[in-house]
Length: 235
Image (cartoon, helix red, strand yellow):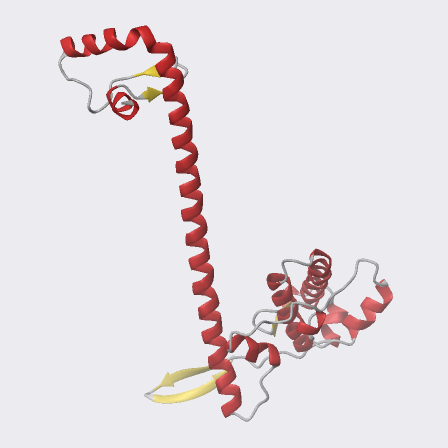
């Protein structure tokens, strides 16, 4: 009976232009005479019906919000699983290539490729920089001074991974975030692009430091065709 009444006269929330109340639903009669008859029948209990309809409306709102949140969480979980699977696949390809080339495969890369748990502590990120806030500035300067550009890039990659992966240890994550900030700032002073491993003297902020650290990846080889004959050059 309650469901039928709700379909005949569903609840309408309060707006700026009108108070809350009941309105004709999709199963309400179409003829004006029949609609007046329906109004006459519910008017004696109108306030009671409005209160009842309001409660049903709010329950449905909560149910819809919960369903939407669950759908969003499910979608996020599926996206994360897809990303994790893609990461495992790429790790497996890299690990296989390294083995074929006779190179040692890092434990963390092998664990990722085999979908084994990776220790999320300082031992799990041996090349990452975990820098406490109370680190002595002089010790930090000496560490940076003794680090080449390409070593800085390797530390950047390890430290960035640590920041991305550690979620449950805020103190350790903060140390790695500090390390990432220090690495990025020093690379900027050198004019060194941590992503591509190349130095750009036009972007140098500290020329003396940049001149002390000049190692970088070789420029990519371009093939220039002249008269149909390929010529290899470096840019």
